[in-house]
Length: 360
Figure 1 (cartoon, rainbow, N blue to C red):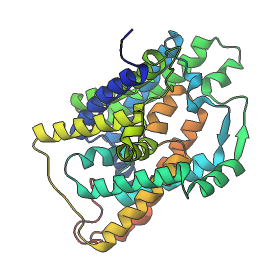
Figure 2: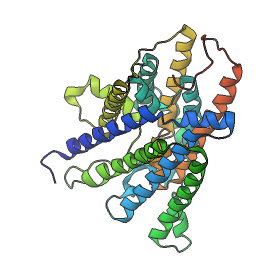
Figure 3: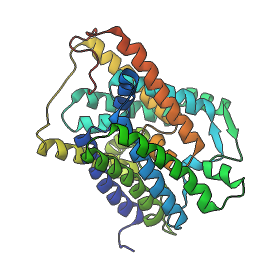
């Protein structure tokens, strides 16, 4: 297929997908947290409609790849029959609350870091350190205790497996959940997403998720050097990226590392050509403390729940994983809780200026 080594080819594809993701995210301001905030405060949200559309496209495309025999989603971490309820729920809640403290989830912080937002950059570095500490460092122990104490094995770990027990064919079992999600997403999007450009942005993000599965599950399916079957996620890859920068000569680039690099490049180019580059910093020590706290919470919570708003929310749910839906619901619940507790402080906060603006 190519003279390039499989991991190099997959990394190049990941970087390209990251560029597309960064451009679309920066321009459209795609953000689940903003959508949840709008929903909590106004009862409707076009950004939540965009997220629903992206999820529907990601699920439809991903399941089409599976049914066409191009990828084997059972090789991904999301369709495992072993799940940790505590990790998914507690980790998701912690991640969601942390996102409120930092004014954005990890993917949004990645985009903002490339536009000159130094607050986002500091938080992103904190997330990376905390994520790696949770994977292999000092935070591994509470994470392992949480996950192992609440781990269970289930014979039905996905929605298609649940429908298959009713005697449905594989195609029907996989496409019925996709059609339900697509129908609900379109109904909600028609009510909330007015701009055709925002429809296109949501569809593009969903297709990038599909592209990630194709890159790793098909292009990376080499007999001698098979690549992990995965798609977009940001929490653990941020930690991997920091380690890669420090140990480059002895490290091998991964899909997630190249994805992060591409997202930074795409976001920078989008902001540059859109004349939205601007240096921004912290206004007070208490603001810095709050952002660092949120960064640690997202690093720990994202690893404990096996993903973020993109990793579990779009990528995981696109595999029809029940665990991913639990994680997404927990993240959204943590965000809603944080919005009600933090934003309830009023118009001017302790850091000065407008209370908790939508963007960092």
